[in-house]
Figure 1: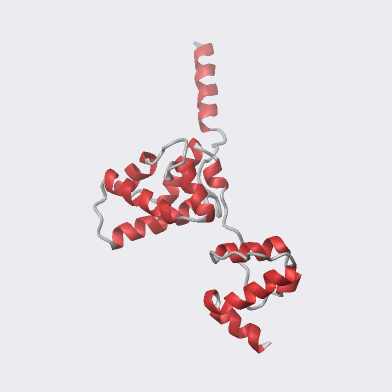
Figure 2 (figure 1 turned 180 degrees about the vertical axis):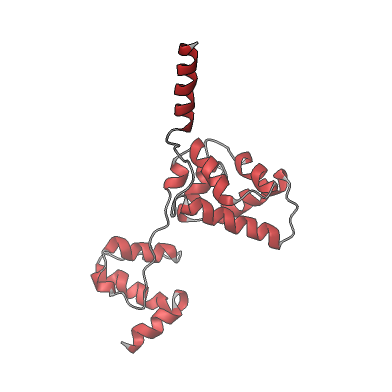
Length: 181
């Protein structure tokens, strides 16, 4: 009898002991939460029926236009044509029940931890940054974000010239500040 009571006390202590939380911390899964939040909002704004099939179609359509980290997220969940796995139903089903996107991302993290390791690149403030102090890799990244390339650019100064040429088109406020300096 004493042995049985000790066992039940030990099991209760284990059950009530330190609880490891899988809840997302601030900044975790930022690409997942942001992407799915925008998807949910667009579905809501466009009065799309919240059925699993309709959500999946909208998700694949949104993934076709995704770039950078969001494209990588789409690859991980199977939203791109070249993805090896498909876990779209892990998103479409909970979204059809209007589950919070952070909870969906929490469950996706358990399936594939890479999903929550994605982080957006920090954005440069072109109005205050000195382009001459940036690395060529960072200059190329600016052009890539704009969807542009610099054919024939060999020197750092070539990339800076190209960015300054395109700045009025992609960052007009920054271009105005740069001209005033």
